[in-house]
Image 1 (cartoon, rainbow, N blue to C red):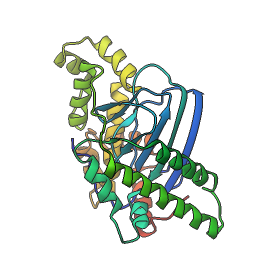
Image 2 (cartoon, rainbow, N blue to C red):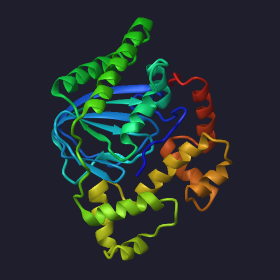
Image 3 (cartoon, one colour):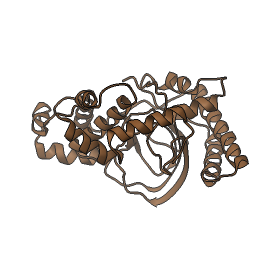
Image 4 (cartoon, rainbow, N blue to C red):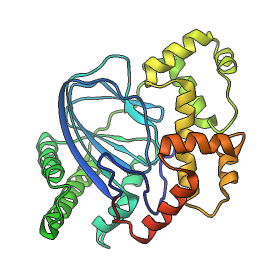
Length: 298
């Protein structure tokens, strides 16, 4: 599956309700699985320990220490499985395409660079231990100064982000080996692949179960165990993310609803508003403001 997606700006609030970048480092002795999710910005995730499997759309990768996962916008991703990690340590950078462009400073198209390496579906890279540790330090420093209003501190954070991206790009470029996707549950793998390719079509649980030769009860239980979401919830998340991408274009909102698989606009309005925290028209208005000022944050 081709993950390369060209976008002009990002409009979804990050962990700190920013709309440019967010940095995070965490260690948890116990961690509850969050479930597969997606957003309209890049995620550069580094795993240090504790988790076993990471999924990007329907590619499942075994996790080892010092591994980088590059997640493009609008891809469902997250830890996979039904066992909560222990001693889970990871760090990540959320970053919009617009901010990537700023960090390239006119010398490199960082979005194009990332997409070059992941367009064939390969999102997983082994980093050197030294570089992974340096990235941890940079992300910790960035997270600590994320909310500073000092122009010098904000500039310093920008320098840290450029250094982080430089290390990541060098490791992607020089990686001699990359982990190939694996199949841990063949039936769920096939079902998830089908849903990812057909989520804009009308989809009934009974029909899906019959198509893949399983019971409705088995499908319902195993899909939640596999992805952390119900089939219905998963499909709605994919449709809403597709709608967010289309809303940035000059397409009537009722046409957006239809193309994303919603039978009527009222249903689309209800689902979108619940998941996005605002109506489609408000989201479109904010997206236009963000395109004018990609560094904007709420």
